[in-house]
Length: 406
Ligand SMILES: Cc1ncc(COP(=O)(O)O)c(C=O)c1O
Image 1 (cartoon, protein in one colour):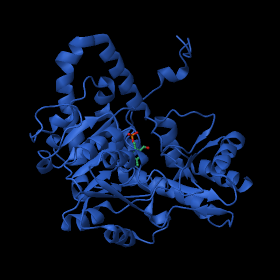
Image 2 (cartoon, rainbow, N blue to C red; image 1 turned 45 degrees about the vertical axis):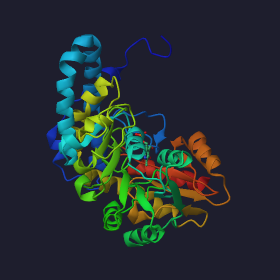
Image 3 (spheres, rainbow, N blue to C red; image 1 turned 135 degrees about the vertical axis):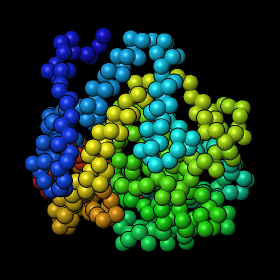
Image 4 (spheres, rainbow, N blue to C red; image 1 turned 135 degrees about the horizontal axis):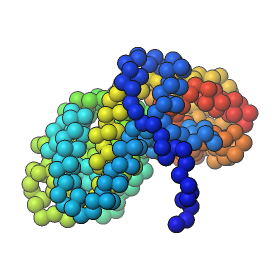
């Protein structure tokens, strides 16, 4: 074995008991005492550095981590008997619970490994006709852009990309920008619900409604939206939505979801080989082979913990933490904030004038022990900052001091 400590650490024996009274408190966004209590009691996080790069994946709360450990043990101990006799039924139950959480039916979702897989199934399976056009913009996630570009390269579609101003004033301005870019041939609009680059939240519901009136579909990437910002999946009005559970739901890594509205399943082509292509059974899209049992079995636990916290409370806290650093740093004429504060939640980004983005991120980490990440955005890039529910207001203030020192 390499790299594994031989002796168990105290954290291997953590207490993961849930005290329901912890979640009855209103948990006001600026109640540091409350959030410190939640952080200490329910999260094991490294104390060596300040993690403001929670946009990559979410830390599992202790009760979820413990359920995951039990599930790994069970799957490993029970072997094929478990996989053949128990898991299929468990999987159905998990799917039902996940569908209920998403307010849709189990017949409209498949569990994937991640959002990229979910959205590739939607993008590559969409029934395009020759000459169809797809609309994307500069803050869409690169993997989905790649998927559409691949179809373009194969001669199936044409991709039209547009640049949106980085600080739109309000949702209606965004809807108008999309409306103006539509052509007679636009068939699909890719909507990145929450941008991974600067955290911009696009008004999916309004754009989808506008598009639908013109007979245009939306394929929505809600990878960063699920669990971070409140929304109702059926109310979005987008017939194809890909998400994951390992960013803001706190599930172990390796779980995503694709939602396809019931009436649209029949026309979808399959990405993974399956001959029942005309069926309206969503199972035709999920011909994956062996799946990560323990990850899937832990979904009910991560959903249950997330529900205890509640997305409203979580999003208000994250918005508050983001506002602390933006409101401080926007006063500096050396710092450019590239995220509209009211059209974002946890994720937001900035640049330091006349400094290379990668250099700033390096200094923040090497000299101040604060992890952020540089992202590609125009010629200057930007630095993305993402707090989580276990982040303290003090941690965020340390970022402010560190950027001032840079
Ligand atoms: C907007 C967006 N979409 C999709 C993804 C991909 O998610 P996954 O890793 O679950 O495939 C990410 C990951 O960072 C993302 O930020």
